[in-house]
Amino acid sequence: MNEGSAEAKANTYPRERLPVLLLENIHPRAAERFREEGYPVETLPGAVDEASLSERLAAGVSVLGVRSKTPVTAAALAAAPRLLAVAAFCIGTDRIDGQAAATRGAPVFNAPYSNTRSVVELAIGEIIALNRRLFDRSRDLHAGVWTKSAEGAAEVRGKKLGIVGYGAIGSQLSVLAEALGLEVHYFDTAEKLALGNARKRRSLHELLGEVDIVSLHVDGRPENRDLIGPAEFAAMRPGSLLLNLSRGHVVDHVALAQAVRSGRLAGAAIDVFPEEPDSNGEAFDSVLRGLPNVVLTPHIGGSTAEAQEAIAEFAADRLLGFLHRGDTGFAVNMPNVELPEVRGAHRLLHVHQNRPGLLAAVNGVLAERGANILAQYLRTDERLGYVVTDVDRDHAPDLIAALRAVPGTLRFRSVY
Image (cartoon, rainbow, N blue to C red):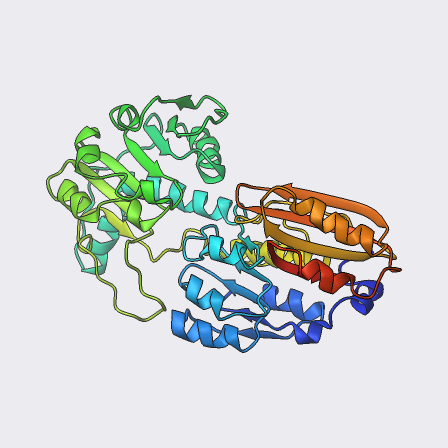
């Protein structure tokens, strides 16, 4: 039975009563996926603020999709009585209060791998462009100045690339960079398998002192704020290059500007900024504007047609999997349970506080009301428990109400 089958649709809550709200120019394929499954969809081109989002969620939105600008705060979530799930149609979930969503039984999904190739290709292109000073030469010609010179231009072959953060993006960059003849070094706080001939370094400063090019691919956790600042620029080789395609707050931009002006750095490529406009056409300012051999791009690392469509498909599939099966695989804020489909039964989803005796209480209610358990799935983390129970359709009529009333219940839903 697939997600869109007649049997599933016949036995689930009417999909036309579960509205979907997609913000920030999410690729149209996401809206198509939901409409194909019978859900009403509203799309908006830009981000909205907390007050506007709260108002829309209060109107009965069941599924919310955002990218990287809309703040999905605890206050906004508190105004959303019918919200079932949230997805970030990107990698980062920094703007979504995942804990507040979890306490309401709403999983938060993202798309951690779908734009990997696009980000890596941009990084490769910028590494070459910075080493050849392509943007400076292009700017000269646009200004009517002919500057045919090899000064400051170099091949990337034989250079040492230092990758900070060796996850999906960092490791794929490692492979492509090595194919170009770069010698790859990396640093990650977690243990990672080195690909090809990449060499792990014991500390960030050890890495910075050994390489010609530094590319940042870390996540948005608070401890990564100003990961690269004055001390780190001082530790880098004179004439080094810096790329940041990860998070805006990872680099101290004032210190970076000083490092470029002083000649400590030969250039930089920055795709993300501590403060970014909410929508296209808004004014942008930065201390990095106008600096030589500094490439500034407007957070477009994953902005290719292929990546955006892949993100739309992946995130929409995660949301539909939860709506149709209760599947929380890839949720970033709740225990992950990957579930098979079931025929001829009721599937009951119970999100609760993780405390002793709660599963026993749930099963006690099922036993007292004559519910025959066909299958049961349980996962917990330090805060939450998520139990999924498939039962025969013959059970006491007050079963649902009794399960909702179990002390410690955060969210209960009958899938079918």
